View 1 (cartoon, helix red, strand yellow):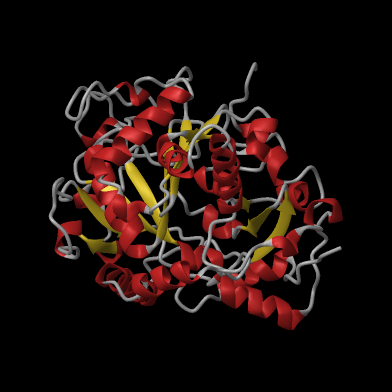
View 2 (cartoon, one colour):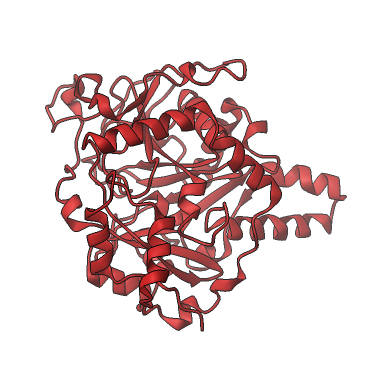
Length: 418
């Protein structure tokens, strides 16, 4: 029976309040946990398989080594340090607790409730120039805290390849309420509803960030997705930062499920084709993750066998549209074209919310029915990547000693025949 050495929840929150620059590094929190010597009360039926994570491969190490030296990452780090010194960040102090279920090492973090009280409610709708005035929009240029601005255009820091789809449609800012270091947001310069689908310009920006930073990116679309601002934005976190609190490698927790699904599909196809044909087919084949599928969670995965660097922004956009159609969203968000009409549907209960996750090796869409479980476990896109955040003791106990992370995900996701 494996136990994870972690600090108590009260110590976690105290550590968050005392962070030097307002951001807790999960690796530091983990080291403090070992020093303090307090064990978690993780359900042994959930956590007993934790040690089965494969070691980091050389290619991942190389990608991370290049990413931390990229000018964009350096710009993010400089902005984090400056914003921290000047008090522009409100950290949601956390420390990781590892719970393994269905072969996934989920990272459970207890949030700083005091910091959460400072976070605004759903904001940024038609006040950007539409008919109906909503709450303050923090993502309009006039409202952005200049201390949080990383770059006003991604083109300014990435001239390594021909720009087929200019990236001047987005600016990058820091997340004012970070859970981990170097958490950045890609925000459209003009107001676009958060319920609009991603387009090729979004994918040009996402591809730049995910490939250059070796990052995980995500998009919370719709009122039940975990979105908190109406203005269209994607979120980006370097995977090495996220991994510091998990298994010590440089992967995303659910990577193991994607790799398993790819291997199973290749094995099935090799029974009918040559290995070359099977490999070519799996490139575009939509995948299902077995633990999600078993619970009826409606989702779809598209895998990039050669990595995101080999996939163009337009191809990524096509893959995204394909997996949306496969889960029953033929035209997500109601936007009929790249510059077609946009409607803010964050107040529309009939809108089908979903989460979108993008890594250097795959993308996934998960349909949502609600933003939290009845026990108060709130879930955004990161939950389906293997990272869950808790705001209350009850939610923390639910994940650590109760039904566990997979049950929480199945409670908030749209499921088959429901």
